[in-house]
Structure formats: C-alpha cells, structure tokens
Length: 169
Image (cartoon, rainbow, N blue to C red; front, side, top):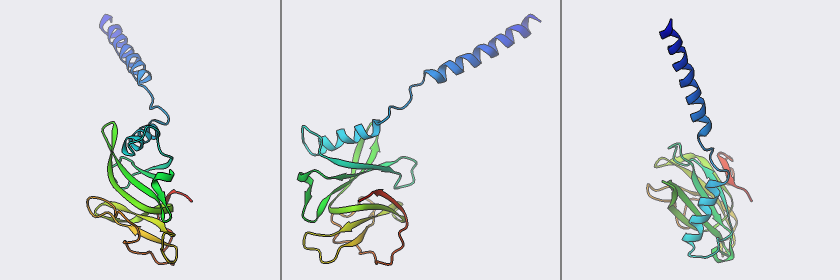
C-alpha cells in the first residue's frame, strides 16, 4: 500500500514537472523574424539605418523553414526599372543571401512550379526602357535566382495566376 501511494505521488510529481516545464518554455517573440531580417538588410546595405523594405516569409524549397523574400524600396535600392529583391535563407540565428535581383516591381508571387527544388518566382517588369510591362519567371538554377528579370522567360498574359502573392502591389 505504501508503494502504491509513492507511485501515485511520483506520477503526479512527473505530471506537474512536465506542466511546469512546458509553461516555462519561452514563447517565440512576435516580430523576431522581421527584426532579424531588418538587421540583415542593414548590414547588407552597409548602412547605419535600415533601408525601407517589405518582407514576406514563405517556404520556397519545401524544407519546412520559411525563406525571407525582401523587397528593398529605399531610393538607394530602386531605379527607373524597379527595386531590388533579396531572397534569404535562414542560417542558424541569422540569414544567408540566396540571391539579389534588380529592377523588380510588385506584385511578387511564388508560383506552383519548381526548378531545382525551389519555387519559381514571378515578378513584374516595367520601366527602365522595357517596352510593355510584363510578368517574368525567375527560376532557381540550383544556386540562386536570376540577377535581372528582363533576361528570364516572360510569362504569357494568359498564364494562370497560380501560386501565392508574397509581396502585393
């Protein structure tokens, strides 16, 4: 009888310890990803102040970890043809640059199609001497996305609006 009471006590103690342990785990800080991306952008820009930007988080390569899709809108990162797009991969507690694409306009979409295991991105190309505005497909080449959207394949106007808008107009 004494052993049964001790067993119940240990089970109850274990349950309380587990509950306390779970309650003691810190919740992820809201905005931590955005803050770490802003830190990366500031360092990337070699600037004391963080350049204006818009960021979206989406798993582009199906590894279960969201990449950061960052659209730099600061005047130092934009020209007559558009602004700069960064794709970042999570690396420990910071970010690693996957690609930098210039002369990009919104909207920016992640298409359903993939190249080398990464989702194809669709960006709008206009201005800067480009004839008609159009949407271009940025296909991952195994290492990065193209550096300039005027070189990649132009998507036909009838292209279905598949995928997900990451950064709207």
